[in-house]
Image 1 (tube, one colour):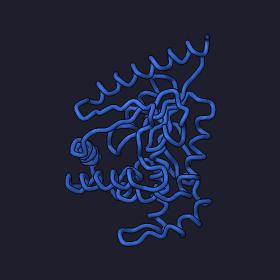
Image 2: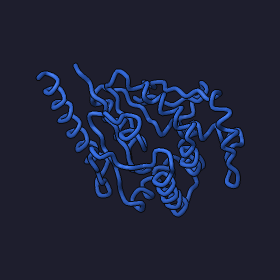
Image 3: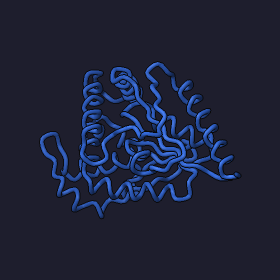
Image 4: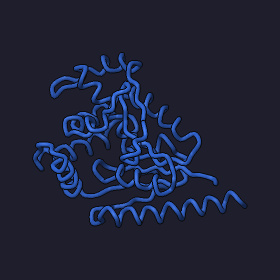
Length: 236
């Protein structure tokens, strides 16, 4: 069967990864979390002292990029692939608020983006992939058959992220999470290299008032319709 590429972009904490994982599983596609790749680089930078609250050694990090190996390994118990940094499973470590506060700064580095975009495009060579991030439909897969752009109010996104972190056992305040969401929005939207923008042919989905199930069913229907339409075009 002919497969397609599905690109999901949008603001932080809009549930992109959650719906992308589930969508890929439903369609029998490969899921790639591009955001996890940037988070893995951020974790590496933090561990090696390249980024702190009052210090950002961009050149130092750039000089070490060849030492960073990011891969995904499927976990059958979880039903999705976890991210590995230099053969270490860092799936949980990269989801902390500490990593979140630096990841948008790391993503502004052109050399980092160039490295990761090349890897991401490699994942999609054979199609049959669902990838989410900030520039998937505009830079990584500009020819994707289906592009979605997810958004929601900052207040809604912060509450969802806060609930998620508290449930996991992290000690955070709602105010800190909201500030992080707003800060990331600003950095992502104003950076010089591949800023967060909606592709001209993307479908915007505001999920401020959708629960996870409603969001998934809506996106699954869109995806199935697009795949059927793509197959018809290929036959004619």
